[in-house]
Amino acid sequence: MPDLLAVKASSSMPAGATAAGEFVYSDTLTKTTGIKKAVAERNNFSGAVGSIWLRADGDKSHVLIGLGPSESAGTAEITSGVAAFVRGVSKHRRAGITLAGVDGDPVELAGVVAEAAVLANYSFDDYRTDDEEVPKLSALTVVADGSLPPLRAAIAPAVAVAAEVCFARDLVNTPGGDLTPAKYADMAAERAREAGLVAEIFDEAGVAELELGGVLAVNKGSVHPPRLLKLTHTPEGADDDTPTVALVGKGITFDSGGLSLKTPEGMIGMKMDMGGSAAVIGAMCALPALDVDVKVISFTPMTDNMTGGDAQRPGDIYTAKDGTTVEVLNTDAEGRLILADALSLAVEDEPDAIVDLATLTGACVVALGDKIAGLMSNNDDFRDQVQASAKAAGERMWPLPLPEDYAKQLKSDVADVKNIGTRFGGTLTAGLFLKRFVGDDIPWAHIDIAGPAFASEVVGVSPKGGTGFGVRTLVELLKTWPSEDEDDPVDSDNSGD
Ligand code: BES
Ligand code: MN
Ligand code: ZN
Image (tube, rainbow, N blue to C red; front, side, top):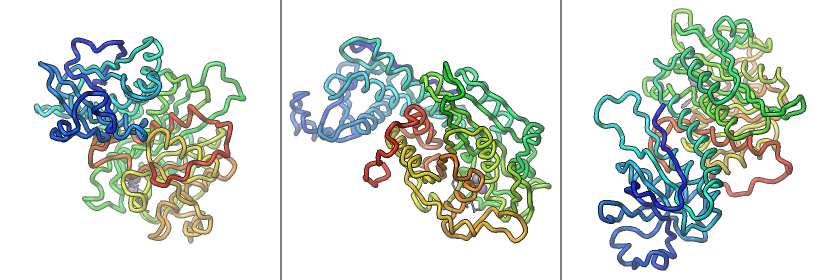
């Protein structure tokens, strides 16, 4: 685990904070700071969103953090300001940010600032022995007027969620050769138990006993036995009527494509193919600290997809958990095979809703680019709730259809179903394959995170590499579900933001 930023609350800037940040709006810059516009501009600072101005103040730095025009500055602007600040002052060990001067409830702001700061301060240096270790802050003080306990009460859960996002990032960044299914399940179970969840690991024999045919089929080419990790969050006072959500996540610890081998370029980055499961595990681990009052169970199947001597061959047929026979015509369409079994397990528990996350298709990246996830569902209301949660969490997601007539592409000549459709609409046929195992009775959402699970550049609080995408959406959904007003339409802004 990385050293996470310690976030404190105080009514004054601590003497030890050698970088002190202050938010400014572009339109009131002169009024609030006394700095003339021309002077600021000569220093390339206009108060624009996500820009900072470091001003030497003796041996300290006084830092102005731009929020853009006051009328449009909100959570997103504060988040990108904090990201710029944390990165800009990373050489200082201790920093502070004052909330004075920002419109809004300081308690709410403290949570936003704390979460953004922890997320932006992240770096993955488990494997570095050189001196290039990225400098990081070790402590940040949020300075605000008024009583401190409410501030602390807002900071603690925000930091808890951010820490789990960082945990998910670490898992994604860990090389496939090191994060074997056994090690992955052990690490995740240990953290889950520390967080207060019940964790059960099913080893190869356990997976066979559960008849997870898809997990076993994908695992045939590997020397590393598979795992299934089941986590349970039971809120205090729960009974049989407590609403239950099941989460499912794809845990392919490395995807070579199997015998339908990927190209060298296509294989780079495939250590991230467990990003869906990492997001699910991260979100689960955050729930006890947030007092989420719904019951949540998660199923994360884990295996790599390799080319060993007994690897499944194109044309092989296996029997899935629910009895469906599946003809595997492309061994690189492996995610849906392990997810189908995990979804069947989830359905057996009769939850009130199911959400799965998976780095499932390259086609989704073609459709939406690498920053927006695809969202599919068998229930429009539930899909809207998931999308609203994503929006509130600052994660970009956009709906895609599950056209029933496309499902005939999955008809096999010899088995009940085959695992690929035509070249076109690959994200939708993957979604339709999964839908077959969920049915229509339980509201279900499928989130294809092939693009946003891993980043090629730093954007805002998101680092290069594993992003932890999905943790915050799931947490937001579980905090607010089931919603009272199911018919509330998601607003019509279609930027994907
Ligand atoms: N893990 C990949 C999908 C992927 C691609 C994730 C790029 C992240 C970035 C998945 O297992 C896969 O290989 N899908 C195939 C499906 C095809 C064979 C029907 C794909 O997208 O090419
Ligand atoms: Mn694949
Ligand atoms: Zn894959």
